[in-house]
Length: 260
Ligand SMILES: NC(=O)c1ccc[n+]([C@@H]2O[C@H](COP(=O)([O-])OP(=O)(O)OC[C@H]3O[C@@H](n4cnc5c(N)ncnc54)[C@H](OP(=O)(O)O)[C@@H]3O)[C@@H](O)[C@H]2O)c1
Image (tube, protein in one colour):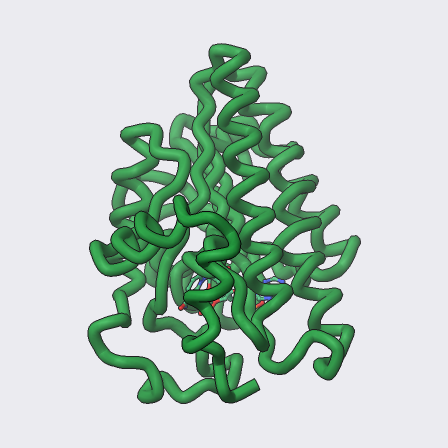
């Protein structure tokens, strides 16, 4: 994308859900956009609805080529002010019984792509002393669940990675901001792709992608490194996080996911 006067945001996983919602919010704030995902038709539909310049990058972030193409787009954009590492998915089943390709892809998308794309973005952002990276994690980062081992582990990595970067950026007196956004259950295509019936989860636990994105962008303005949208999830994390590991492990037992 040509370097113009308008700031640019690159969003991975922009073809649906939280990523598409970020695109809508950022377009209304005057950002031009680079939209990344595998489904080019969905990206094109979204771009046609937005009143800003959108570049579409069809890339599978579980592949080296997909990550390299996205990193090249980041390095080539001198006006990049925001990177949103949002692409992600879940799997079902015990770790040793699930298709290993899905576990491999999850680590590539959640961990490797996030690390490599953040590295590409921070080169320019730290030099310009301006910009931000939002890593879309999950409240699962604060937990471990049966049937969800890699998901919780990769999201916990995202939080730790983001907190480490925040420390380094503060130590370097940089104005660049980083955030780990940790949503709870959110109405998107996530559970459809996973094959989980949303009706099995109580209504009061579901949040709207609009509210998740609004909380994230408010948090970024205030420089919040970990953002947990919604009072229910804030309360759960506030109680769970400080507990010693042995107590957390004991509490978890009755809540085991019986579907695995
Ligand atoms: N929904 C929830 O309850 C919830 C809760 C906590 C955290 N999250 C996190 O929020 C993020 C967004 O998920 P969502 O809820 O908005 O679900 P979603 O509607 O299913 O969106 C997921 C996005 O990720 C993209 N994606 C998946 N695999 C990809 C790959 N290999 N390469 C490139 N893009 C890929 C998908 O695009 P294509 O299929 O077109 O490639 C899609 O745009 C994820 O990181 C998820 O873990 C979701």
